[in-house]
Length: 375
Image 1 (cartoon, helix red, strand yellow):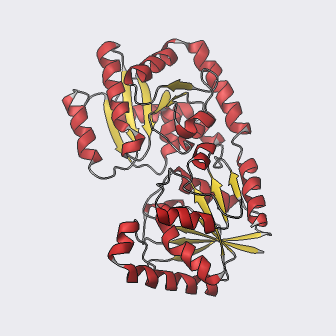
Image 2 (cartoon, rainbow, N blue to C red):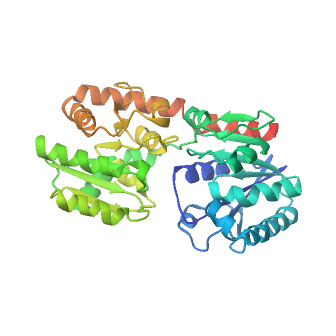
Image 3 (cartoon, one colour):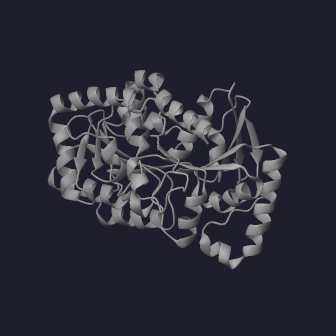
């Protein structure tokens, strides 16, 4: 039996973390023994960790540098963390490390080298191409990319050539789908809006490349030029000074009664089910898990024609594309969905079928299990 170790920072939750947890839950326990480690005490990831008896370790004593500058400031701290990580690997007889969060690589990759443990990097984002990454990426035992877009932008490829593209597994949620009307009413009651109000959603952690400003500007243009009873909802955690910046934008444009920030929600799928459509404005999104979640829940999607979105959506078949960073085009595509019920119904049906086949969890689990065996 292969013991697979999954370290997490634990202080953030995104689509890739949920996908890894679904991989862990779906593994054949007669062949694979997953072990989870978190580097944060009582982090927000805790609410998502499995309670099925999976082995979970607190790794708070192993400090993780956030970036290469942190390493240069205190290299001794890094060496101490690597030493502690090697002790953990040996004590727990780990065969493979499946590493997701980028900063974790600084410790766990070098601990793997020291112990002879196989190291797989789950490349889920757009990686900068510094000299350290160009060297270490060549030395890892394998890389799993969450999209072809991610693969094309790797800093370097492993010397052994072991790379696989596996779209993140996204589980269907039939219970939520069946209760869409309930969740829509619940959300409208929470917002205090009328039954006729159309709810246009945005789900992402508020970072620069997620382009929440474009969503707010689109809301402004819609309400200015094509006024209607609409509510614009943003779900996700704020990073840096984004909260103050975005709230100032809303106040400046007199959108306080139209735009709502609901923050991070662990039950975000219930909110998603209540939307009339979802808008994804991100630029160079590595994949775009929320698009597939929306497709599973019969929520039509308008997404930027960028990054991994291009591998999920077919324009006018499973969703609509807008030019990246083009508020006028996002506005135009939203109006198309609002005004063409036949197209909207066609998109919903075809999108759900695509989510069920192309992004079926069983398909992705098989690809990753096969990759573990190769390593």
